[in-house]
Length: 275
Image (cartoon, rainbow, N blue to C red; front, side, top):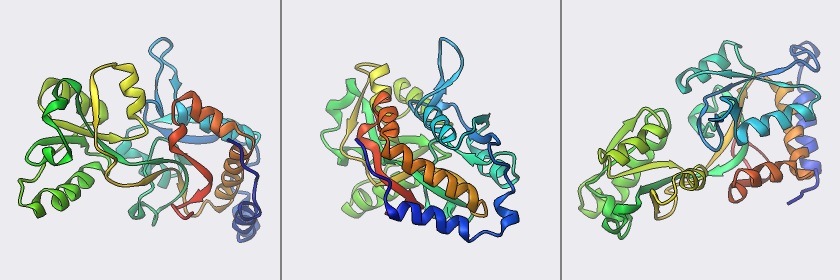
């Protein structure tokens, strides 16, 4: 798919840059590498290639393409999910590019350039799929998701709306150490179901053929965003324009197709979930 760089995109980039004092706009030297926080455990967005132990995935290729549009390179700073926002606030990194959901609660501190659509998705072991004729069968069951994400709260909200209000027992929500831990507990029978971002499940199911089955549709709609400090207006303008160019020349679509994410792409530049 290919899109032209619209006047609104250019206007956004120019207005962000024009609003800056000259000194602030020059805080990052032209052509300097962009340092990005990343957590390498969320395939196909970011993970270590088992054969080479090198970082790979959609976010890695997308970040490198953005940097190339700006005539620079990207330096990956591996960290934990819990430390990403702190690293951004202290200036250890320039951006976060690691499958972070664009949530209103995070926008006081950071600005997001949204680059994928997503939503928390229930899934179960395929061998137990017959136990779950519909999503209502999750009521009273134990469901896990990474405690570092918004997913446990999303599960609890869905349970209140669809189980408790219907007079059924609530879901027992279990926070796990990450999506990989949730899948491990699911395989061990410690969980009845798990939740993960819908954009990651096709890849996981392709890697572990015949292991999992999705249940129903995503329970909410969200964006995944590249995050940067709200004060970094010049960088936001540069990255916004680079994103729009990647969409326009088809590079973004090509990278998404390589990682099986065609259904989760965005058609234009989106900042802080504003279409």
